[in-house]
Length: 366
Image 1: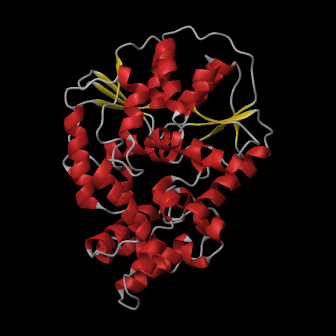
Image 2: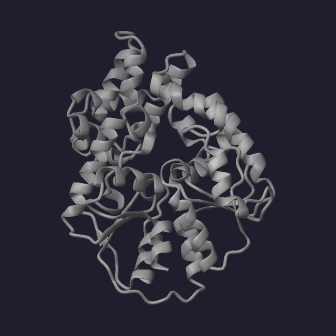
Image 3: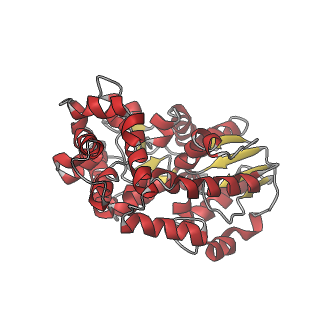
């Protein structure tokens, strides 16, 4: 039972009136006490006590968490709310209590191997020349790029060419991505099956480079428990690019006001803060500008935790808040270490400000 495994977290949060609510992106976007960290944990406490049912309304509240982890930075008790919310979603899934939005994500995974739908034909048509079934080094694109920003795939091909990475193959599928959304939405059986199938395709590879920090974090932290063993080194795109650029002469560029956004999974999740900044400084000729909330205190773009799928309108508000924060620094452009974040921020920025993921920005600058 969920309440037994997370009793301490639920009880501390239920009776704690501390400051985490003022940094929670979902609470800020929706301005409702119910979706604060304390509110969500209180609801789970009431479910534990059988005072309220574990129904779709409750599960929908548990989905009001992006998994950003910023609340933990402000918690006196170091409570990590997201794993509790993820387990609450999983308990709902085990009982057959699933919201329509999450069900749609699951159906797409079961039919197409990704959360968006039938992306494989367009993907193969765009990057087919760089796809191999067996390779020593695989580059795994962010599924958001394939679905929502296909020009990012063109940028990948260009950067690989410019950096002379002829030995790098693009991921062949059919599973596009690690299955992160299956895991975060609590579909544990389906996640295990997806992870094992993904690991089978990766067998024999020496290195996997993930464009999505969520994918890299999922593979590193959750694949072992799912019984999916990978022999390959798992790198984020930023870590790999920094390694490659360290051995190449980077052409000089005219410095621009580049504002860097730390994605939650890349920063707080994997501890990768330095690599993207070093890449930007090397290529741009000057250090990146910083958000007023940056590094370990960087605020969420609104994509994580399945939030952009289950509560899309609120996710757009979260992204809009980041754009409003960005304007304070008067940047020429925003660069983020996640294509999913770039998609979210672009949807909020419109034509008011250029937003790039790291690889697309490199393609433009190189």
